[in-house]
Amino acid sequence: MITVKEIARICGVSPSTVSNILNGKTNMSEETRQKVLGTIKEIGYQPNFFAQSMRKHNSRVISIITEDLNQFGTGSIVEAVMAYCEDHDYRTILMNLRLYDKWSDTWFDDEQKVKAVLDPVVQESLSIRVDGLIYVAGHCRLINSLSPDLPVPAVFAYGLSGHKKYPSVIIDDEKGGYDITKYIISKGHRKIGLIGGTAENLHTKSRLLGYQKALFEENILYNPFWVRYGEWTRTSGYREAGYLVKEGVTALFCMNDNMAAGAYDYLYENRLEVGKDVSIAGYDDREMAGYLRPGLTTNRIELREIGERAAEILIALLEEETAEKKDYGIVRIPCRLTERGSVGAL
Image: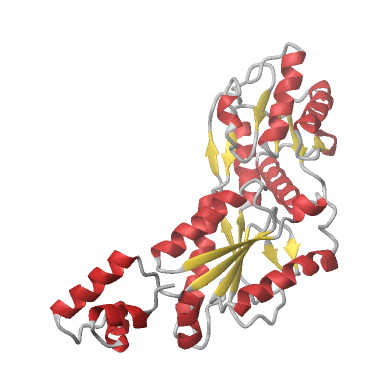
């Protein structure tokens, strides 16, 4: 590996001169500066950031810890974090816990299992002197796995921190459920069935609350028999759509696009037309939403904005000069209703 000393020897200057030029100082001649910079470019020298961080006590490196890169939304959030950090002269390292890959969905309530994987990753990040951490959850839930005694700031993205010390950036699911239900009502529907995810899931609970508030505002009686729970899968959407259509609903609010696609399957197999016989709305705005026919009206989750906001908060915490750091608490990012053709007017 080329060192500052070797560059200095090639250029016939002192190592301190090379170091000053690398750090942007201008107390040397333009001729010397150009000679050094030309040599650096020619040999492809790259600074050793970890060695620099040992000397300067800050690294301008942020560790991104993901529960599983294969989860919906994680890739977009990570990409947005990286882009924001890069734009603000911070580098990132990515640590993937692979929790879903290792244990499917059996680890959510097993704190010891999670900590056994997370703690070594946190220690590795701290050992290379990262300035802060961003923890990207696979889905929104209360997370207590990260120690409240970390020596660096941390921010949660797509999940709720169990410790008030760490800010959280999440979807505004209650508002999302409210907005899409109000939209369905605006089309004349009053018999609106709901296909939720698993009943204990925070996304499900918040979206259900928004649905209930919208019904209440419109003087529509809430019918608990029209609320069914799936497993976020296409097959569960098919199953629950069958029950609700037989109950006489005119519209279905499905809490993700996978279950909405299952509802499409049920209507197609039973010679019913989406948007005419029964209207369907989804949630997430996955790629499939634009391929379904008619196109699926759904709520777009602003994943990139979640990542950008998490990075913005962490960098603000790192760069605030005051001893009293701002309490960012829980930041909720609103969804955007994407109207297509699956919700018809009565």
